[in-house]
Amino acid sequence: MQRIKALFFAACLAVAGAAQAEKVTIAAAADLKFAMDEIVAHFRAENPKDQVEVIYGSSGKFHTQVQQGAPYDLFFSADIGFAEELVKSGHAASNVMPYALGRIVLWSPTLDASQMTLASLADAKISRIAIANPKHAPYGKRAEEALRAMQLWDKVESKLVYGENIAHTAQFVQTGNAQVGIIALALALNPALAEKGRFYLIPEHLHAPLEQGFIITKRAAGNAAARRFADYMNSKPARAVMTKYGFVLPGETLGQ
Image 1 (tube, rainbow, N blue to C red):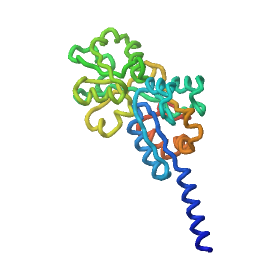
Image 2: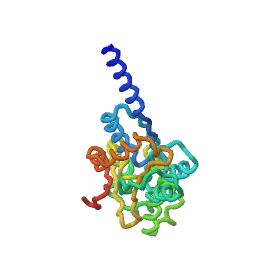
Image 3: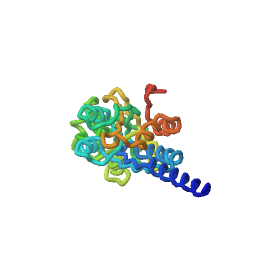
Image 4: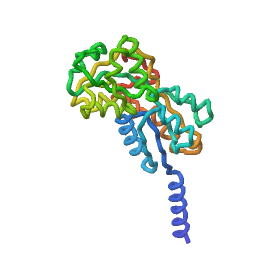
């Protein structure tokens, strides 16, 4: 009888453990690709029962998809405004949680971008420049702002090719479909790109801050794993990864 009770108790614990394990689907801005992959790996190591899937893309498109009921539990936006709008419209189960400030850079595998400035883009030798689509990609919008601030937009607009998101923009440059691109610092610092090209950090005063934030979506109100991951973003391992990829974290200032 004692053995039966023990087996029954063990079975109850197993069922309880299975019930606690949940799946989390994250919609993340494309600039987070490399940083988020590492953070998720750390999170899985500490929470082996939780299943985490990350989909990368344009913040603007994710914003629309969440409003339309897309099955995302967390939404990480490269423009905090998109997350704030979802809170106001009742599509969030949390307040907006700021997670970083992003930076934009010129990057090229064929030109020495470290010796360039935005003014270099007006050179006739440069015929194709990649930026993310400003209509829905925050990094593209900031690229446009910087070019306009330097009075270069009209000079280079005919050279521009538009990526669907910032990762797609980097691919344009990697594959030779553009000679240079304005991409996220977080992507340029990834070894895959850092080994192939150099970058020029675009001064932050030329564009509005790339303040980034995330929410737990309304559909994930009861998802404990989503809350665990949200909390994990403020952990030392997660913050270390974000810093590694050039993000300025909440509580820090540019230049720290």
